[in-house]
Structures are given as C-alpha cells and as structure tokens.
Length: 241
Length: 241
DNA sequence: CGCGGAGTTGAGATTGTTCAAGGATTGTGG
DNA sequence: CCACAATCCTTGAACAATCTCAACTCCGCG
Image 1 (tube, rainbow over the protein chains, first blue to last red):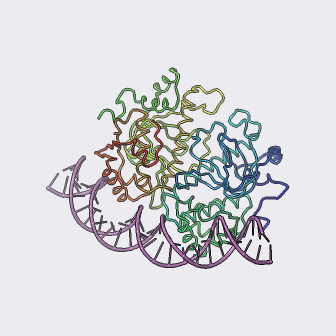
Image 2: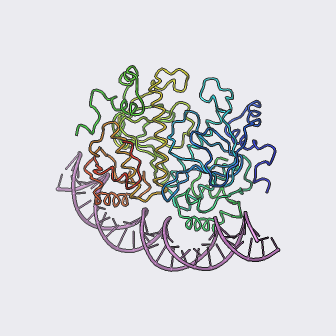
Image 3: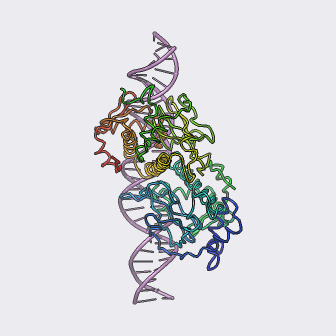
C-alpha cells in the first residue's frame, strides 16, 4: 500500500515539509531549505530512546514513536509521534527534563533538524516561515495534551478511544497519509492502553464495540474509520477538516 | 490564621514576588519593579472568568482559581491556580485559544502584570531576571500538566489524590503559605473530583481513607498532611524540598 | 427558624481489571 | 519449506474500582 509509507528513497523530507506547510505557508526558499536537509539519518529499533538528554530537534521520517513517562511497573504515554512529526525540545524550552522521554514504537528513522531552528527566538531568524511553523507545531502538540487530559479524566473508554483515533485520523489526513478514513496503524493494544489509561483487554473490548457499531475496521497494520464524521459528532470530537 | 491569607492591605505583591524568587534570584531593581506594580486590581466573584479572550498576564493576589475546560455536562480542571501564581498566556504563546479558560474557584483579586513581560522574547528585555522567572514559571506549570496526566491515566484514586495534595503542599510551602504540612484549602470535594476525574462521593471516600491512615487532617478551609514525607514516599511523589 | 449548599453514608449498577488459557500471526533458524 | 518461539490478539469468569442514586446530616447564613 504505497500511500501508507513515506516516499521511499527519494523525497524523505516531503512528509516533514507537509507537516510544516499544514501550519502556515512556506516561501519556496524555505521549502527548499527543508528538502535540502543533509544531516545524517539515524535508524532506531523498536523500543529505543529517540533522543538523548538535551537532544535537539529532529524529524521522524518513518515509523511511529511516543512521548512517554516510565513508572515502576507502569507507563503513561502522553502522545503518539507520527511520520513527519517533530520531536525534541525547542531551544530555551523551560519544561523539566524529567517530564518525559521519547521512545520508538516501531523501527524509526530520524533526521536532525537543528539547523532549521538554531536561531529560533532571535530577532532575525534565518527561516522565519519555518520558525513560525515550528512554533505553531509545538502549540498544537501542547493543545493536544489538554485534549488528552480530558480523554483521561472526563470520558468513558468508548468515547476516549474514538476521540483518540479521530485525532490520529485528522493528523494523518492533514499530510495525505489517510484516504477514505483509512490509515497505517502499527500500534498494539497494549500501547493503546498505556495511552488511554486502560488495560489491553479493555482496549480490545472497546475496539470490538467500535467495530460492532460499524465505526471501525481493522486490518494488519492499518485501521479505518468509515463513518468518521458521524463518529466525531457522536463523541464530541471537533474535526479540523 | 494570619499565615493563611496574603499580607493584607500592604504588600499584596510579596506573594507574586516570592513565587518568582523561588525560580531564580531577582536583582533588587527587579524586585522593586514587582513590588511597585501600580496596575488597578480586579476583584471577581466565585465562578467568574478570570481573564477574557486574549487577556494578558496577571497575578492572582488572593483566592484560588483553576485552569479548566467545560464540556456539555462535565468539567475537567487542568490545574489549580494558587495565590501569587501567574495566569494568562505569554505573548506569542501558540497554544490554541479554545484549549482552556481560567475560572475563579473562590472570590479572587487579580493584578495586571503586562508591563513585566511586554518585551518578553525580545533580545534586550527590560527585566531579564523577571523574564527568566516567568519563563521558568510557565515551564513548571507545563511540567505539572504531565504529572497530572500520569495521575489521571496511571494511578488509583488514593495515589492520585495524595499526589495532588502533596503537589499543592509543595507549592504553598515554597512561598511560606504552609507550616507543618498545613495550608489553606478552600476547595470543595466536587471540584477535587473535577480535577482528578472522580465523582465527589469517591473523592469523599478517598479523603476518608487518607484520614484513616493518619495522612490527612481536614478543618474548615484548611487541610494538613502531617506525615507528608512518608506519604510522598508511599505514593511516589518527588518532593522538591 | 428555615433554607441552601456542602459533606456523609449506603446499596446497587457500571465500568474496568486481573488472571488464565487458547488461537492467530510473524519472524527466524534449520 | 517447515518447525519453533515470541508476540500479539481473543475470550471468559471472577474481582475490584468507581459511579449513580437517594437519603440524611451538618453548618452557615439570612
């Protein structure tokens, strides 16, 4: 399924570019600056730490990751990181180092994006449009954390799950990685549970109920929300499309 | 109980000052800049909106508030706002407008702090130490949101409640508003429930269990954690004192 | 004195967890 | 190509956590 993977050998940077462009127009020079990123790529296996302490900004070119905190005997996932997304801390970001880390949920490819934001926050940045998009990207990520708190604190499993899947659908659609409600989904039920604060068995039952209601189709490595507009209406998800 | 209220007619700004100083030293000029804030104060009744859309930075001089999202038939509180805390959005903060609002949980007094951060983000700020402290304050607030997600997603009611009370104890101690584990607590069980994602009845039962275990004392408008160090150990709260 | 809001308490219904076992899928080495 | 292990998914039953409903108490306030 070609539409589900990123672009192969050539154009690995199209996906990051589309993520940025979804947040604001880029001048053609700045488009080229993104496409021309020459930093060496890093491949990591499932489960590995995506960036070390103090690590700078990176794009996730391929695979899925998560922002997570590990506790004795339990993990809490704060957010899924999708292909094309940025990870890492902005320069001078005051969030505490111990709040979270990033982990690969599948094999992933990363590329350093430090040059794009090296002068972020200074008066005359080299890439003003990119800087604006990056800032906006972080704002979106922070907004989604508030949504996540609401899922965890104020919704039942069914609504919570639907809301999360709808969010992922939106984010994948925005960069062309979803068609007709269908998109790649390489995440197991265990991990979904660590995101939503549910046991994997309850995740299973909740997915079963969604399928039963005709709101969800699942195949190996993918998933579809055939009536996502209706579902969004039902569970109070504000669609951005 | 004099220690539980802020400083009366004179020195209303001591509390905001101490919040800032807890995050980094201020030059004596900048101390005076905080103490000398002349903006008019605003008094709001319980339940009112603390700042309108696009409102700038304010200090909460007195009373408690919360950062909250209202849903049909339910509310989710993201954070409690304590006396001396700052609220509002930093200039150029990219978080979406609809993510949350601020509401007064008791009668409150606010003061505009716009002048302290008007040039925040520019190369040569007028108050560098204050700017650093404000930035750091927001970083702490954001870090606490991650802690909150963990409470909601990965802990049982008892641990979750203890963790929250310990956080509030820490924050009040930091500015001298708690002694021997005891501090003002003008919040009802309903609101605690809206914070922790629990029904008020379950909040009641959870508090009862904490009292029973000798970890909690409650009086009208106050609360004490007589063995907070031990409790922090028990529930995995990282004490900052 | 009566009223309203908040705290208390109990019983029963729901939601979600745990434990345990069996089935499917996938990747790997022979 | 097959056997095997590892991992994930599926299912059921018992249990625990939490919610809802409903009544009752207590207290502050007019």
